Length: 486
Image 1: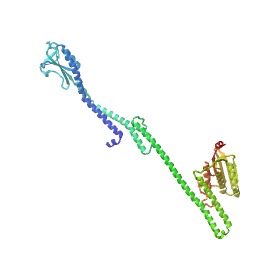
Image 2: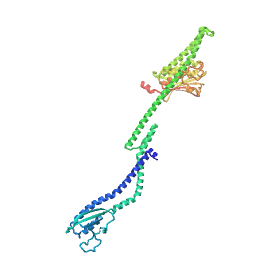
Image 3: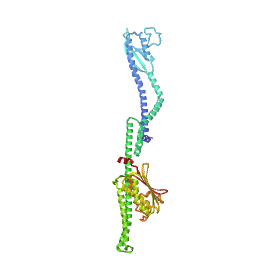
C-alpha cells in the first residue's frame, strides 16, 4: 500500500489532502469544544460585572424595601441569582412569598449559609460582588450576582452528541474534496508526464491540451513547443539522412555502373585487339593463309574501324555523363532532321531489301542539340534495319499529339522478349548474349540514345506491338519558347 502511494502522484496528493482536511476538522472541533466555555464565561463575567456595578450604584439611591423590585428585574433580565449580605455576613435573598409584614418583608434573613437555595456548582461558574449602602441606612451591604453555565454546558453536550455524525460528514467531504483536488492538480501533471514519456520514445504527435494559465499550463505549453521543435528537428534529420542515403545509394550505383562499364569496355576492346594482333603476327611471319597480306590488311582495317567506332561511342557516353556537360541547344525541325537520317540509312535498307513507310508532319520545331539528336535518330533507324529480317517494313512517324512532338520507328516481323525490354537502355546490354559481332553491335547505341533523350527532357520507350517493335521519342512542345525567340 505504501509503495503504491509513493509511486502514484494522484493517490499521494489524495491521501495528503484527506489527512490534512480530517486533521484540520478534528482540531477545529476540539478547539471549539475547549474554547466555548472559556469564551462564554469571560463574556458573561464582563457583562455581569458592568451591570452589577450599575445596579449597586442604583441601590445607593433606594431604601432596602425599594430594592426588591430592582433585584428581581436584574435577576430575570440576566438570568442570574442575586444575593445581598450585610457587614455582619448575614445573607439576604428575595422572599418566596409575601407573608412577612416587617420592614424586611421583601427579604429573608438567615444565619445558615447552607439554607440558601442556589444552583449546583456546575451551573454557577461566574460570580461578582460590589459593596454599597441603602438610602437612609449607614450599613454597608454587598451585592453578589452569580451567573450560570447551564446554557453553554448544554451546547457543549449537544456538540458532543453530534460527534459521530460530524465525523462522518467531515470524512465524506474530505474524500470528495481530496478526490477533486487531486484530480485537478495532478491530471495535467500526469498528462505532461505521459507526453514526456512518449517524447523519450521519439513520438512527437502528442499534445498537452490543458488551457490552464498557471505554472502547470505554462509547463504544458513549453512541452508542446519543445515537442514541435524536436519533431521538426527529427524530421529534418530524417530528410537529411534520407537524402544522404540516397546520395550514397546513387554513388554506389554509379560506381557499380562505372565498374560494369569499364568491364564491358575491356571486353569489347579485348576481342578486336586479339583478332588484330593475331592477323598482324600471321602476316608478319607469312604463315599459311596470312601470306595474302592484302586480304588480311583489309580485314585488319575493318577491325580498326570497329574499334574506332567503339572508342567514339565511349567518348560520347563519357561526355554525356559528365555533370558539367554543356548541351548547346537550338531550334530545329524534327521532321526535316528525320528525313535527312532516313536518306543516310537508305543504302543500308536497300541492301536488305527493306521498305520505308514515312508519315512526317512539317514544321515540328523542337529545342535541342541538332548533332546529338541526329546521332540518336541514326542509331534508332540503323537498329531498326539491322535487327529486322530481310524484306522488312520500316515505318517512321513524326507527329504532334497534345503537348508533345513524337517520333516513332517500327520495324515489322520483329519481337523482343519481355525479360529484355527493361534492360535495353543499359550500357553494353545485348539481347543476343553471345556478343558476336556478326549478330549485333557493342550495346552502347541505345544507351547513348537514352542519355541524349534525358539531356533533352524527352521520354524514350521501346515496346512490342502487333506490327513489330516500336521505338518512341516524345519531346515537350516548345511553341511558346519559339514565339519568344521570334
